[in-house]
Image (tube, rainbow, N blue to C red; front, side, top):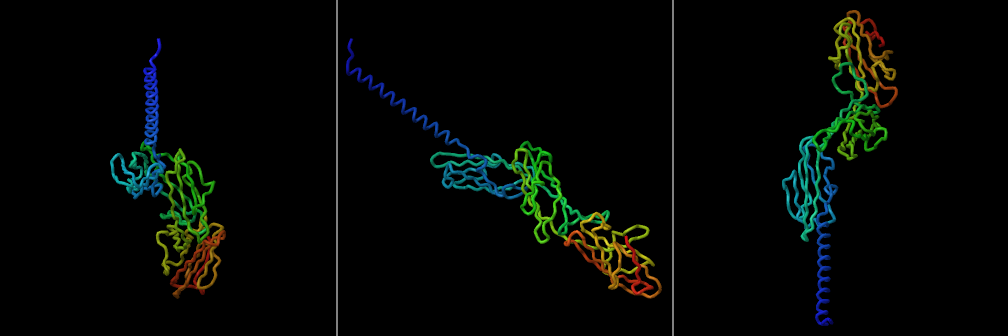
Length: 353
C-alpha cells in the first residue's frame, strides 16, 4: 500500500509544528522558572545597615537598605517593624526608629519591588545590648573612705564590665559565654582579650594623653554585640589634714581647713595622701616633706603639736608629698596652726609615723 504524498507531508508538518511548540513552551517555562527563582532572591541581613552599628537602649537608629539587584531609587519600598507596616514609598531607603529598653527586641523587615516586578526582601533582628563600666584607681584612700579611688597620671586602674546581652529567646548570656576585648585609646592588647575577661587592670597612658577605655564584647558565635568607649577622668593626688585623737584615732570625718586652733595641750596632725599609688600612707615610695614656719622638719605622715607656756602664736605648716616611683604624682597642702602658747621658736615638736 502506498502513502499519499500530500497526506505524509501534512503529518510531517504537524509533527514538526508540535516539536517547535513543545520547545517554545519548554523555553518559556525555563525562563519563567529562572525569573521566579531570581525574583525570590533575598537581600540577606547584611544588606540592612544600622547607624549606630550597635544601638543602645532608648536610642534613635537609622536603618538603611542597600542592594544591587534592583534599582532602589524607583522601587516601591515597604518597611515593617515587628510585623507592622511603618513606612512605604518609592525610593525610601532609610527608616528611622527608636530602640526600647536594654534586652528589648525589634524585628525590621524591608521589601523592595521594582517596576519590572523584581522584588527583594531582608530582615534584621535588633537585640538591644549594653554594658556598664565600673572603674577605680589602684591608689590610696584612707580606711572607711566612702568615695572612689581616683586615677592620677601614671596610676593603674581596675575596670569591671557589667554587660546585659540578650539571646534570641530573651534570656541573657552569662559572663563565661562572652568574649571581651579591651583597649586604651583604640589600641588593643592581646593579653586583654579573652572569654569571661570582664575585669582587667590597665596602666594609664602618658599624663597628657586622653584615657579612653574601649570594650568590645562578642557572643559565642563571634558576633560583636556591644562596642562601647568610656572616658576615665584624670585626677591629681590630694592632701588633707586631720587630727589624730588619742581616744578615737584619726578623725577622718573632719578635715582641717586653712586654719586650725588647738584646743588641747598636745595634738597630732596627720596628713593623708589621697590618690597616690601606694598601699598605705606609710608606703616606702611615699616621700613626705614638712616645713613649719619655713623650717624643714624631718617627719613622715604626722607631726606632734605641743605648745607650752602662755604666749599665743601662729605657725604656717606646709606639707609636700610625692611618689618616688613616678614624677606625675605629687601634691602640696598647707594650714595655719594657732597656738595658745609655745616654748620654742615654732612651738612644735615632731615625730614620725
